[in-house]
Image 1: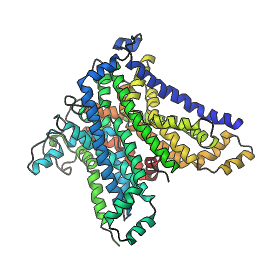
Image 2: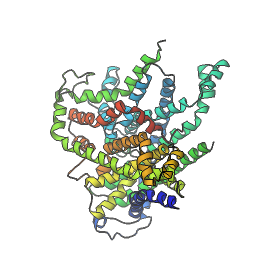
Image 3: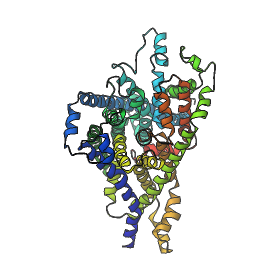
Image 4: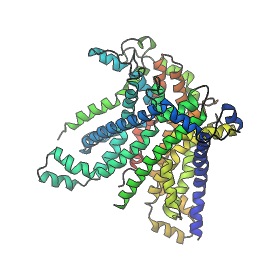
Length: 292
Length: 267
């Protein structure tokens, strides 16, 4: 009995914290989304209930389609390249060679840098007039590309930067997954005369499936959240061409002199719905693996 | 046997880290060269960017340090006792709490930022350092509880039983046995909460953009936002902002790797 009380006593601060710092902001967000807030009523209270009006505004806005499509494209393309490049690098490092541990650690740097640092570095690399990328294109005779300021390229540019940031995470997780595959499996495979490629497709890749699933699902949850990179590089522009749900929500609430908190919260709640579905999928997969 | 993998590995790492090199290169380039064709090495290296950082960004740096350290303290104070309870005292309902923590990690920052903003405006506490610390801690607390729980779970129950027979209460066992034994977990949780708070831009931009004390991420953002072309100052600030991450890679890489893989891969 005493032990049980102690167990709860040690948890009380955390539970109180979760209520104040998670449940309350989330509740505030829902409340914002169903009321007609103005700047005045935001400070002084008394905003009228408007039900789903904010959601109707959001769904009726042509930006919603763009933002949803961009979110899907940004997420899927990022995940694909982060995973394939990360896996290739993990396989490369799995053998272990002189300096491999040091180089692997250095690979982590992009992931640990503050996002504002990575994003502004990429913004300068891709700058139309003075960026290195356009200078390099000029050397091989290609015209300058307006990476960040043209609607055709802005989403591509922020996706490239985001892939770069995500590769290290994929590398580290997949690498440790590879380390957990018993060495005998490879020995058996090579005794059977399998080539390197065959071993990868028929042995390594299937054995790595659980870790791959977790990596991709965690990547999905992280990528849906991405805000800093896009906001700092393009502010979601030009004219909404690189807007995602996350940046649109921020833009509605904080991007203008005239904030629209209701629609901003409504977009946020749509995003959270998507994120939580992805999250539940992740938890399901993880639970299943724990049982296996 | 010398492997071909070493030179290839060095080359791959160089390609991967090229943007980081470029940041340093630009930070040392004089403004007069900024409009010319970019040069791969700083031909006329200058410290003017860094001098400007010293003149203008020191208060921002101090705030970032304060916020990051505050977040570490708050995060550990909340997470360590809770992890001890989940790992060793095992009260009823701990599975549900673990589930809540997993879901909490998945909530997009923009939603938390808007929620916190609504609350802070109502209470009149926007633009405060402690308000930012409280918001920043939400990035780290669920992660810290989960990773500390897995570290503390590996402390053998027999040791705790022996302590109990010797008359140690749960608090004594926590402070003098479990906490020291899970030192690595504490370090990992502290490292990541420091790094995340140090790097935070979203909470700073929404909750502290009018504050007297603002973090370095806002300092960089203002440089970019002023639409000036003084990219050597911007990149010099970025280099300074990267120092903690670089130090961690050099002195604490095994903790970092442990943090990245925790939750994703079970050993």
